[in-house]
Image 1 (cartoon, rainbow, N blue to C red):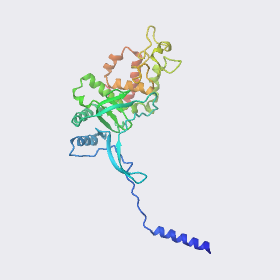
Image 2: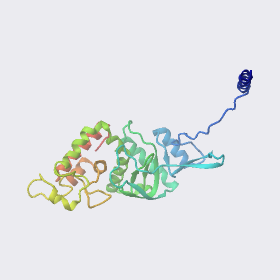
Image 3: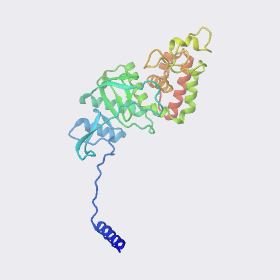
Length: 307
């Protein structure tokens, strides 16, 4: 009898609960897409960035804090969340050696934004294939990075572009280098992809064939004389002689420490020079020119209009 009473009590309790109006829980939009630009006609800079975003689909920022949101922590305490751009270097491959990083930057002036947007519209956007995704662009003034100089740096969800105030006054040589660095940052992931694995293996093999006892990457340059074989008689064993544009920017005493850094260096040099200009710089280094051909092959397949 007692068991029957217990069962009946449970049924009544369930019925009571089911009849009670369920409380609806509103979950804040913590997973919102932050990489959008909302218009503000009262702010000329934001409005200009909004028009650029509507035209290209690429949000442009002049501050690494791109939004705020009121949130509640697990203890029920309200706080303000600040959404910031991620400046951590990001590639579709494992990072070998010390990872590149942003050492410092300073915000640009709002007055310099119009010329930067005009530059992007005329010099950069036309070079980008529609298949290349650019999450955002962060315009800054002074920029210092470990591995990639002062012009451009690829972060996780943004590409940082420095020296914005100087765009209008750049001479042709500086402008070419500037464009090369920016395009390298924007195109690296598209080039270092599985689609081009076969071409890139040929690219790497150009330098690797000259060192058979170990990998040609991350070699102490003073050891090249004892490690390199197969160069024409009388040719000094230098990084350039075996097909590298230069030493690794993270350590000048080593050949590029990774294949991806080798690709990045070639990309920047290729995109920052016309074919005639590149040949003038490196035409006396046949192995560099062979690797240059492979990079141009990939860029042509992507649809990048290399000069």
